[in-house]
Image (cartoon, rainbow, N blue to C red; front, side, top):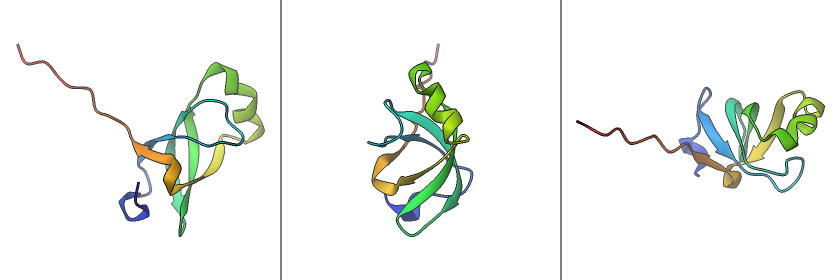
Length: 76
């Protein structure tokens, strides 16, 4: 994801190789040159202790961020 597409308040899917075993969802708090500070809002139960240790905050490279896919509504 391009850094120019990331804005404060965005909720994004996140992937990091360190600190978290599984992907998670976070809300952007601050945007840096090549990364963003996020508040972790949803994570796998396995990562619960990691989230607590990180105080629910993490810096993620823009390469590890992606938009959340919107659910398709079925018109009846």
